[in-house]
Amino acid sequence: MRIHVLAENTTCRDDLAAEHGLSLLIEACGRRLLFDTGASGVFADNAARMGLDLRTVDAAVLSHGHYDHGGGLPHFLQLNTQAPVWVSPYAFEPHFNAAGKDIGLPPDLAQHPRLHTVPDTPVQPAPGITLLLAPDMPTPYPPGGIGMTTLRNGTRIAEDFRHELYLLIEEQGKKILFSGCSHRGLLNIATHFRPDILIGGFHFMRSSPDDILAAAAVLHALPMRYYTGHCTGEAACALLQPILGERLQHLSTGRSFSI
Image (tube, rainbow, N blue to C red; front, side):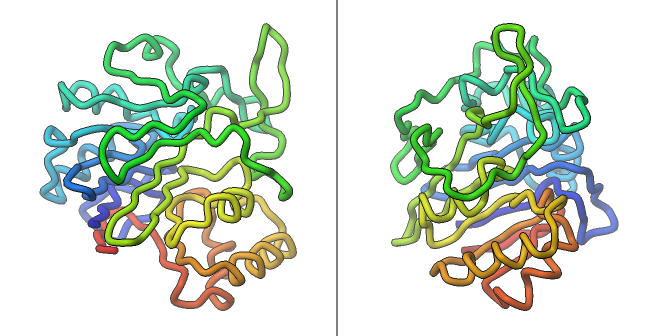
């Protein structure tokens, strides 16, 4: 498996732009998958500078319905004219941050003919590649998006993050799970799926040091490796690193690596 970081909050190359968002190009199981599109067209500009042709992407996956993961979707749909885009059926519900700001996706995209929704049961678009909503995931640990809200039947309610979609790739005896922001709680996701490798944002950027250290103890006890960035936050990574050591790797725009 080969992974290219097209957009992330930081960059490791002067010629590539960083933004608050996430976009990964994944080469696995004989397919090229785009996981999230960042907040804008930055992911596409960076891909071109990295020598990566997004026109050859076989399918795209949106991890959830927030702008910093799906804001670049119109750019992808224009650039790539054939790939299906897999989304949660709840991705285009209204979504607001703790301050009440709209952080959702453009609603006019919801009916685009190339969008495919994932039902409550897992979908396998290709051998070794599975998309899951995991509606019955136990949540003994707190979620990672406290204070966020959505609208249902005209009423503002606390967000339950039912729009979160996970990508599981099984290749060469390894299970690699991709989670865009882990809003339903990183520890809930890690202990439920128990992959060999967990990749994505962990949403610790507003967590207290005590909460991060408590989470680190749980993560350390799990037999897995972690690649993270974006909403994890640099301060949280600094706390996690001494505990997880080489099992924790950092995502940064322009980085390409093999698993």
